[in-house]
Amino acid sequence: MSEPNYMSDITGVFGYPVAENPTGVMQNAAFQALGLNWLYLNFEVTADNLAGAVQGMRAMNNFRGVNCTIPHKVAVIQYLDEVAESAQVMGAVNTVRRDGDRLIGENTDGKGFMQALRDDAGVDPTGKRAVVLGAGGAARAITVELALAGAHEIIVVNRSAERGEGLVRLLNAKTQANAAFVPWHDAYRVSEDTDLLINATSIGLYPDVDAVPEVDFATITPGMVVCDVIPNPPNTPFLRQAAARGAKTIDGLGMLVYQGAIAFTMWTGHDAPVEVMHKALAAEFGG
Ligand code: NDP
Image 1: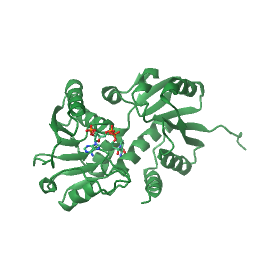
Image 2: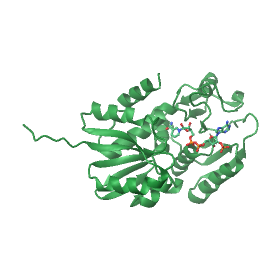
Image 3: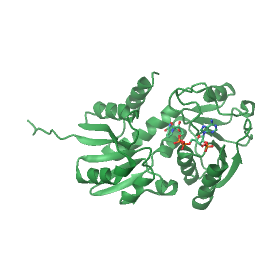
Image 4: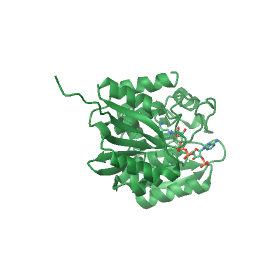
C-alpha cells in the first residue's frame, strides 16, 4: 500500500472581482480526467493585497501556479523573478508558473489564439496580413504573438485613437511587424489582400449576444480566416456573417480552452485533455 498523501497541489486565479471567472470549471475537469490531486480556486485579491498574495503563494510549496486577471495582469510583474518574452513585450502576465523557488510570468492569451490558428485552421501566420478590431488586452496579446510569429502586416482598427495608436507604437517598437492604425468610424471595409480578420473587442459577449462589430461583411472573401475572441456564446453573429461569405472561422471558446490548456501543461507538466476542458466549459456556457 502506498503512503497516504492528503496534500493537494493548488492553482487558481487572483482577481477582483473574481466570483464569475469560470476557468476553474475546465481546469478542475482536466485534473479529474488525469486523476491528479490538484485544485483550481478563485482567490479574491484586491489591488492593495496583490504583493501579499504573491508572497503567500511563494511560501506554500504546493501552490503551483496562478492565473492573474483584472486588475493584476500588469501589476503582478514587479513581484516575479522572470517574465517570458511575449509577456514582456505585452507588458502583461495572465499565468504565473513555479520553477523551484522562482515565479515566472507568462501570457497564454495570445498563445491560445495561435494554437487555434495553427491546429484548427491550419494557418501559418508567417508573412500574413492581419486586421484586428480592438486595441485592449486581448488585441495586444494576439497582435504581439502574431508579430513574433512573423506576421508581415498588422492593421489595428479601434474606436479610441489613443489606445489604437498606443498598440501600433508598441508593435512597431518591439517587433518586426509593420503595424498601422485605422480609426473605426463606420462599417469597416476589409481589403482583399487581408488573410486574417479578428474581432478582439468585447462586442457580442453575453448578455449582448446580438451585438455585431461594424464591418462591411460584403468585403469578406472565402480566402480569409475570420476569428472572434468572444467565448460566450462561441457562435457569434460576427462569425455567422463571415461563414456565410465562405470564410473559415475560429471561435473564442476554442482559444479560451487552448490558453487554459497551455497553462495546465506549464503547471502540471502533463499534456492537457483539451476535449474534456472544451466540453466542461461549453456546458458551463450552456452550449
Ligand atoms: P479591454 O476592455 O481591454 O478592451 C476592449 C476593446 O473592445 C477596446 O479596444 C474597446 O475599444 C473595444 N470595444 C468595446 N466595446 C466597443 C464598441 N461598442 N464599439 C467599438 N469598440 C468597442 O478588454 P479585453 O481586450 O481584455 O477583452 C476583450 C474581449 O476578449 C472580452 O470579451 C474577453 O472576454 C475576450 N477575451 C477572450 C479570450 C479568449 O481566449 N477567447 C482571452 C482574453 C479575452 P476602445 O479602446 O475604443 O474602448
